[in-house]
Length: 385
Image 1 (cartoon, one colour):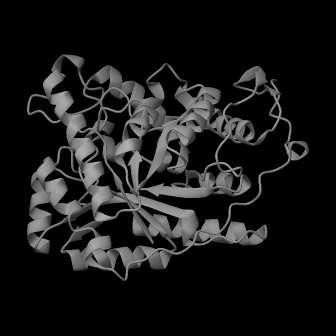
Image 2 (image 1 turned 90 degrees about the vertical axis):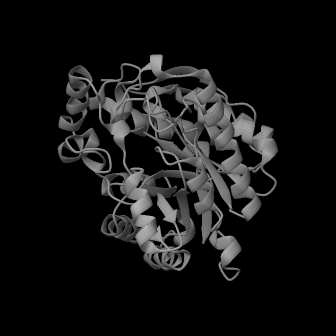
């Protein structure tokens, strides 16, 4: 089992209204600077207590933090991490140039001296589909083509062209190459069975975020069965799960403190204006958000996602970790803080690291990645109609 921390520069101010997008006039430079400093301190603490990886992500117009480009944060983190690796979980493809993403990850591999734990190629939260005037209806198709393009760009030894439905490139030649010839560990969403099937088709790992115990079990069952059907061997080392964690001396205190601060809420899913809410609702109607936010969660107050799945005393949290490991989860990306939780409470939870408290909590080797396909094996990209 591997344990990581999902950090992020969490901007905290009592003047900041809830909802998305955050209003720029409420951003105070000193508080923004403090948010970044606190985030770096949390990452360094995670490295000190022996966590396996630290996670950076991408969110726009506020969201839960101040990280519109996770690759910038990763580059700043690299010299600070003595042992922990850096997980890019990750770039949101529909709103980015996929070739640029492929280039930046390859550059980060060199800048970090191979410290990249893995990269999740994601679609972004439902509201973020509209960040750069993307069409919500095309979101999934754009994401799938982006993933296929990036994987090929990382694996092709020679320049090539791409004539797809959503992207057309006369020449692609991603440079530099990765230190490991096999390329980075790649994860795709496992939040829906459709996404699991897509990950299986490309021989990638899966990453599941904030899903219920039953949802996680269903995704892993689908992943294991699909891999077995194609002769691929997968196991817990191929599955990452993210959720909130909150630890205190007693379960009652943990629940009371988490509830008091709204820790575990996803208020950045809630647009504060009618115009934004109407656009957001269109993403739900298009089917994009069927695996994430719904009409039900749209209408609820912050805290509607409930308390963290991992909550209570260190022993209780460790028992929950065992439960998820029994499902087939091999890495847990814990949200120790952010989302409005005071930094001192997040640091307290991080200090209860299972790595420090439970020496028997050890890692196992990850099975080798499937060999990259040869250029001749690539199917032609989907042609334009």
